[in-house]
Amino acid sequence: MSDNLDGFFSGLFDFSFSRFIAPKIAGVLYFLAIAVAALTALVVIIAGFSDGFLTGLGAIIISPLVFLIYVIFSRVALESLVVAFKTAENTRKTAEHTQPRI
Image (cartoon, rainbow, N blue to C red; front, side, top):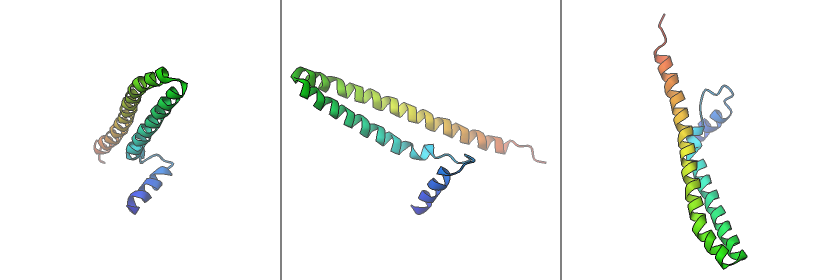
């Protein structure tokens, strides 16, 4: 565990950007996005009922839909980010293996 943490912090302060940390923290960012979306939906529902029964009922109907859409977009965005970094890593490996040997 300590080696992973040391690798994370050494990657975090790697000013040459030779190692990427975004794929390693994508899961944490996704968890935070879900947590923020859930808390926001809960606050909207509570605020809706404080404005009246019909507003609260509307919040109960709309909040889960907005939550789901937000989670889907967050997931797609993070997957796109990870795919971009994986592509960069694979491109680097390909370039290293196709260098002419002198």
